[in-house]
Length: 336
Image 1 (cartoon, rainbow, N blue to C red):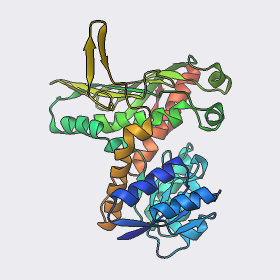
Image 2 (cartoon, rainbow, N blue to C red; image 1 turned 30 degrees about the horizontal axis):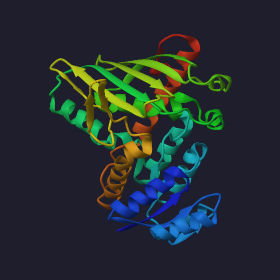
Image 3 (cartoon, helix red, strand yellow; image 1 turned 45 degrees about the vertical axis):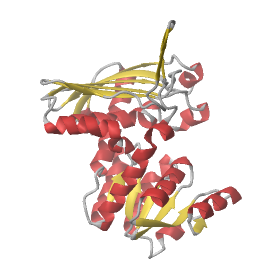
Image 4 (cartoon, one colour; image 1 turned 45 degrees about the horizontal axis):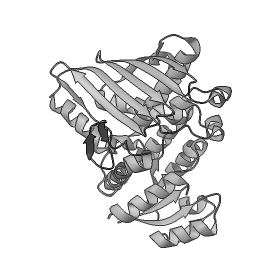
């Protein structure tokens, strides 16, 4: 049994807290911190069995009983808090992205290595049952040599403009998961990126300097080609599909739905829409990634999503942004 501290009690911090409380037998949460400690937060923490709620995360880092921390605070704090946690000797689960700055990510990884602590990055989609099934087919050689990897990722509605202004852009807050999926499903590294995008959903997104619709093509070191299509608004729900096509065949996934019921009648055939958003679609994957992180700490195993897995999607996102701005393919070697 290890004791855990959670830094950040926003949406994702609470998701991880409840996952640990319900599904992770090898860990217990000793404390959670947030810059805003409300009566509602304290009541919620009490209900799921968290004994301590702090407005200063340093109390978590200074607690000798706490073995591991989850960095679930705002994105701009991920790197500095991870560095502090490593120096305090805590094992670290860090939500994505570690940072948008490559030098700061490298500093985090250096401190983690120096401290000898575990470090896992929160790319939860690697733990999704659908994507794992694709990966298992690829590993088994069932599709042969991968030729094409296609990922569709479309949100049900655009985020608030206030979020868009501080998110770092669609490539960093949304597509970064898909960049990780390209690496995960292909088993290869991205070497070149070409991105094109438009503002088709909300003009205010363009006024904030971002895009809401994109297609990204990626060349991989093994010769395969990746294609990602993104939209901020799919009126029918959260569209999350993937396919790997290779020399021996193809494997693809459909969207998860609330039921598999299909209604057929004289006027047409109707089935369920996809689950609405990421909390509905990926809740089990959040729990599974926590199980794996705790297992790595308790049994001294390598984490399944390591520091380099956190770095590479950021490099791809930077290349995609440069490609979009300059209207040309960009090699990752130019970014790194």
